[in-house]
Image 1 (cartoon, rainbow, N blue to C red):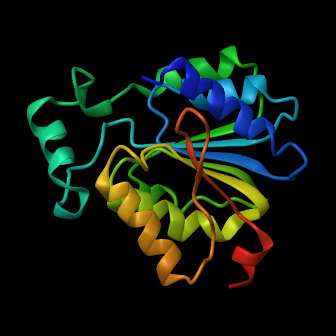
Image 2 (cartoon, rainbow, N blue to C red):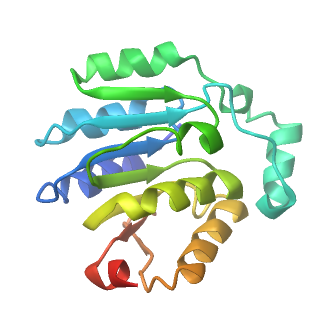
Length: 199
């Protein structure tokens, strides 16, 4: 699902924070190819948390925008069965990456994320939840755990209105003066600077 150039940018971004202690958290795993690639490519082998319903995307709401509604209702995920994938794909991907320290958490974000204990800082938080509510739940629960100068990748920032709205709303409501940046191939990301953590 990810173009090669975007895939590579994700790998390089994640590898750029090897000096930051902490785990990797991906919210929206699908078949696990991206998180497995990040783990496999990185020199620093971190603990990984993989969150996904493995039942596809939740229903679009009004704050997700018209394009999201059309995508879900008429194209059914462009043949991708609304991004549904069996958990076995993610398990296989992490096995191929030789990961021996990961936790695949199945369930809808509003239940699975608040009820999962992450006892170390998050060095890399990759958000791929598409819609407003999914993105907001991730930010509310996981942003406070992101290490200083940790990396937040927002996969759907340019794709869906709901995702970008959630990011803007969260940063604004929490008075976080963080800059949204992008790689040359359009991977949206935020570095959790000291200035952002103080507020």
